[in-house]
Length: 279
Image 1 (cartoon, one colour):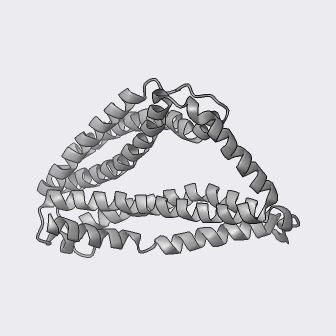
Image 2 (cartoon, helix red, strand yellow):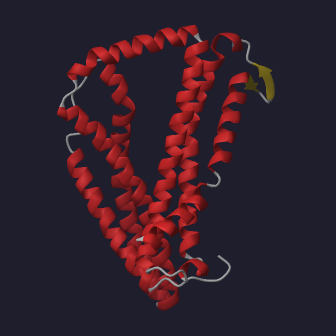
Image 3 (cartoon, one colour):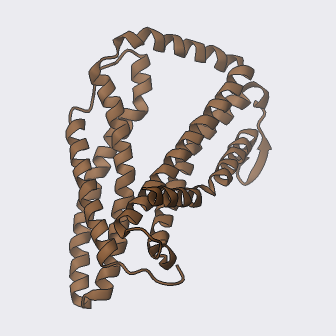
């Protein structure tokens, strides 16, 4: 366990070393988009900067957080595969299955750390906006007053839908790691051990399966994504009825799919996936 924790720490640091740079870029970019207007290739100073600058900055920062979170997630996916294919990492004194799980878990930990930092930065900017923007100050007070009035209406159904949606987002994050590793490991294994004709047939079958699976996930993700985004607004309006009646089934199916691909990935990684130099 000590070895597992040690390599988790090393991988976590490796995957989080660019976080500060991403946050600086996001902050500066959102500040610039708030301070300046861009129109027909020309740059203009925002004339309403003194009345709504901080609110606009906060809005752009929150919207850009989705983009930068996606970018960071993709970088962790790429780093996963680089570590898996790195000959040095394959020689560390740890079982291949534990190394694979360490790799995936450190990526999720880095992703969670990035999300927490995004929330902290948003709260800090929100406090600044609350202090200097009187209109935002008033709206925020009214919003929290509405939340306080509706807190007594929260029931088990709405709490299950909310936390279930968060759990689905976590499972989807793990699914992305698992499916990318599966495609990487299986393709490499086929190219190394099977004739070319069999490899092409296999890829056709896998492509059809992945398309069907991704389509199902896209439908579920759209419904659940709307649940997450609309929950605060529906809550403040007093609409506390759940909308995801099949959320429990979706969570169970997603968990089973993740466990299946985790099992397949560990087998492929430990038995058929050979690391190469220069990764």
